[in-house]
Image: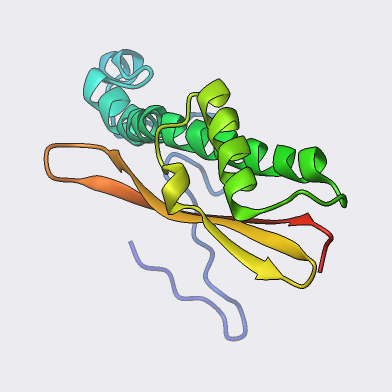
Length: 160
């Protein structure tokens, strides 16, 4: 059973089923699972799909809820940008004229929030600075909502 090796020689471990003559058996090692269990394991289960797709569904839902708020901001920004082309560098720009023109743009763009009275108009050199800085909320779940902050500033009139 045990063999004594001459000094300087290292023991040689042979795989199971091989002989000492040096050639090895061509048997494949057996897997831990039976063949029937291995063939039944294919793909992702329904619970796995649920776990994988839940974050994507949540992001999609947030995107759907935030999109109207972002579209409203784009309409506000577009209205403010049109003020710069409407008044240009010429005269005639006064806070009342700017508010009146902005109200017309908001009516065309269907902007309800922020109201024209919430837009800050201040003197900046020879022109006017028109700033729409506001917060808007996108409701997500029952008591959870996302609050988004927007700030758009343009200079109308003579520049400054």
